[in-house]
Length: 81
Image (cartoon, helix red, strand yellow):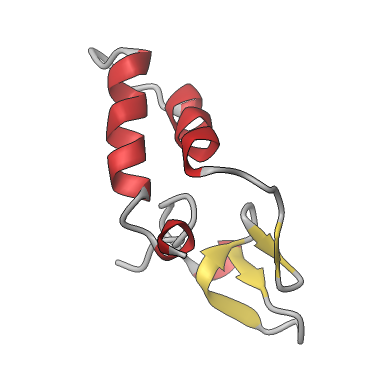
């Protein structure tokens, strides 16, 4: 499974972001990347907060979701730069 290298969602054809030349990105989703630029200037910590706030996993606290998200996101291409 290919995932967005910024937010970690599944990178299916319908949600692939676009490069400067309007081709589809093989690394990033439309929510994170458009026309060759990231849609938001975020730090890893801010991205982890966003992911944690949007997760709704029964039995997982917001703090636990944040820790998991930060660990997972840190492995992705955008955050290794």
